Length: 426
Image (cartoon, rainbow, N blue to C red; front, side, top):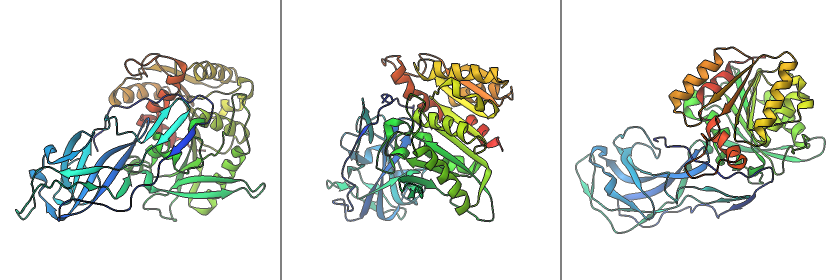
């Protein structure tokens, strides 16, 4: 699937969101020509959440990809950007003759977002569409399949990467509380090998009893499980789904903190996970929880990736011995001064801290160059502030609320930071 420019989401602040979940996707397909066997909606997660980005049409014969064009299919309210054949119901960089026709849709369309933030309310929409074959298409045998006025309704959904996670629940043996969690197990898991594990913790805005909310709100969990990342950094990915906030602005934590640590430790006994390569990351409240765990359990994680978080600077002295990569926005009215205070304390404790200001509008190549310059200082603690005004879209107010969310929309796209995290060992 072609990449797009990242989108921004409205800040939820410290309060929990109200989650509205629409009814599930239909389990059948209607309409279409006699040669069409079904249609599958395809979704993809971006920095600001999940979007409906393609439809896969399945035919009863192989389709000639070279004969397809964007005019061949119509979906009301959507912009068709690419059309090509494939051997499976998944997007591809290049078309391949096969029984599936992939109809890519613009993620910029107003109807594309499936995870929608409006102040403190989150609305989740189902991925569903009616698609019409507007032009004739040609099979690999040369047969022409006529256009049809009958629309085909998508009957299933392929949630890229999200569907690769499994959902479980952990019951606290001490108090009986339940913690739902999502776990990505490497596709070629081999118990004779040893794997790292990444723990991602969501912000308070994604608080929900719906287990996969943390997976669809942004890239914090799914980016580590992408085929590209797994090819370079094969790992388990753990994404708990909290039904209530874990921490608050008074730098206090709930029982969820200890339950999360207990869950991590349990997984290391159930799978071949290297306890010297455990990593934590989180955004906003999740970053705060990472800090709190690092303080209370200093020997647990080999490195922490902290995005848009803060904590009481009088409590953070133990972090001076840790390996941290911190990212905030200069426009974040809480996390930026909060992290300034934290890193000042760490330096007073003797830690070496590298500081940098990056342009949030950078290209992947620009971020790679900026990362290389910062990483070259070989500091155990790296503190990156995204320059004020560079993490907002045109016309969006440059305030602490919007920047708070924008920070993680950008931070988890920077491959170099993820690579740095995996290089650290206990």
